[in-house]
Amino acid sequence: MFSIAKMEIAKGMSIHGKSLLVGSSLIIADLHFGQEEALNRKGVLIPRFQFKDIESSLMAIIKKTHPKELVITGDLKHEFGSILNTEWRNILKLRDNVLELCDRIVIIRGNHDVMLEPIARKANVLVENNYFIKGVLICHGDVIPDKKLLDKCKTIVIGHDHPAISLTKENRTEKFKCFLKGKYKNKLLIVLPSFNPLTIGNNVLSGELLSPLLSKNISNFEVFVPDEHGKPLYFGKIKDLK
Image 1 (cartoon, rainbow, N blue to C red):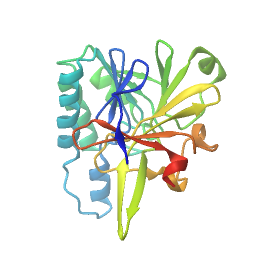
Image 2: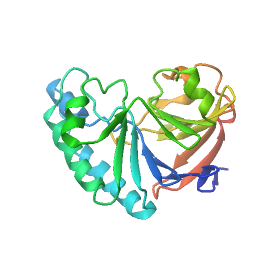
Image 3: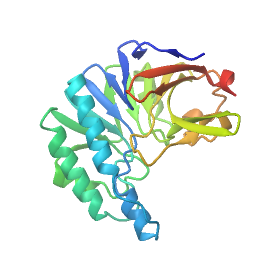
């Protein structure tokens, strides 16, 4: 039977919905603004509810946790080669809402953020390839950080992989977004789920992994699933769920 975990996934790091609070910094991953418009342009008829859901969920967490800054660890936007209308509108609106309650927004550049700079300049937000919060290194996760960066940190926080677990009972299979906690070499590694409601994620139980930081055996990684109230449920280790 699964048990409810303590709010802390590690010392000084707590799960709140699909976000991670580290000190006074709230970290989220993989918003993929513009995904609905990109799908519409390909002929996929999907309603554009993404921003409303993200905004509602994020602002509720911010009002509860009172962070000084919001850190988005990559893939703020979805489209690679252009800036879609919904990307402009959603990012600027999110900036306005967040800065009413936080001092600043920091955006980590993800592999989808090729055309991020024009929006970042207009929004007047900080864009970095990586970001430090004391001994915690925050990066997107699509590449292995430079050794100099790794030498300075004890913990790495990434997104990119959209981790989830698929569980089957009888003829029914359900997929749940999740956090992963494990080791990369001698560093604590925490992987955040996608904050985007459209992106359920990649099933980590079947080895559907993207980040080179997760290229080795992750059977000892621990799994935390936010419930419908945003509280984490501890599901144990990956090797025990297969």
